Length: 127
Image 1 (cartoon, helix red, strand yellow):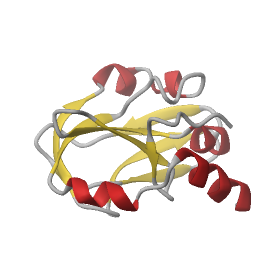
Image 2 (cartoon, rainbow, N blue to C red):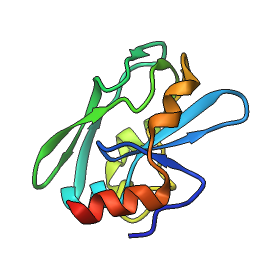
Image 3 (cartoon, rainbow, N blue to C red):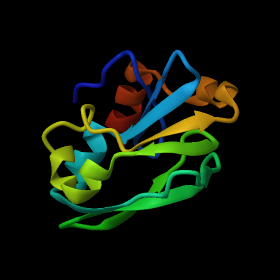
Image 4 (cartoon, one colour):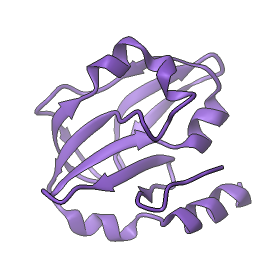
């Protein structure tokens, strides 16, 4: 699997890109979309909702299963990718080009506990 080195990764298979303005863009990893199979539905929080580290914030449904999306950082949702909600199958061919939401992180220090691309690759290999 190809994991971009400019992103951070959670053990629950979300990717995070911390932006220069203090926001964080969140998506699901290539490994996650591969394990799920064809994504057919996304449930995401509304703009203004609060995310709490390690707590579910939405769901992703595929032909195989329904899985929780788990917050890799705490914060307030400032943008939701509504185009992706309307066409969730776009995640499968381009998981790193399809962001789910952008949050205003309340504690960017939480990002220090996320995995690097190399560590995430080892984590997924260990299964």
